[in-house]
Length: 107
Image (cartoon, rainbow, N blue to C red; front, side):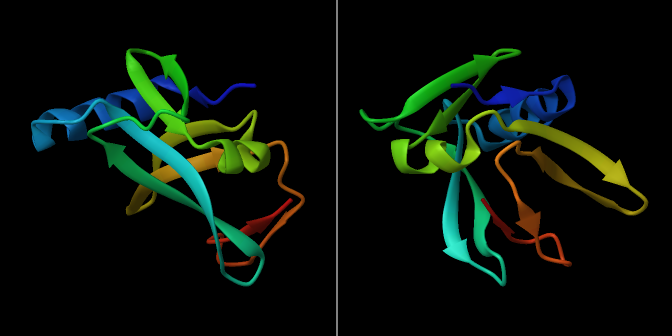
């Protein structure tokens, strides 16, 4: 079981943690929503929860709750720019389909 970060994603997260002035990492999870059923959710972690799985890469800790890990195990988190837009990109080997807007997915 693993969640991986590209160097670009780690650098972006690190900058935001510095700007916030607190935090120990990033929480990656899923929530039920959208036309395909699930969407990724990201939030900064100030206090880890005891049941979290913790993955560390490039000096950044990613926290994932056990229920979400089932759907996102093996996911690579990247950050980049495309035209005028910038944001995180998820490469999830469990994804079977995603909606046209790219906001939700199904496994």
